[in-house]
Length: 144
Image 1: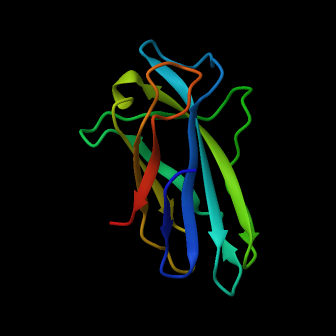
Image 2 (image 1 turned 90 degrees about the vertical axis):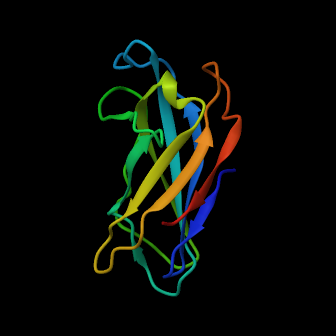
């Protein structure tokens, strides 16, 4: 659904969805909760430790940032363990997104699993103008 980035070791990371989440008590005035779904696919020949993969930033290029919501009743999970060759895993992270990010956002996915950290994957896209709809443009990805 969204963009993807192929890493030098054969691992592929993608932002599968960015969608408004059901109302969350922690959403500040002028913002809304958004659920970000990230997928990691292992196209290499060896297992890959996904425990260090996470969204390190969701922001506008100009600097306004979304804050991660780490509590609440909405389902979300971080990556844990390893993904076998040929397999995929996903994680969902919830963010309190300022309305200013709707016209254009950037998501940076840190690939910090050891023993060798990979470059960050950067995704850009737009968010819907009203809650309950899907993004107007799917995220596209690149590495720095």
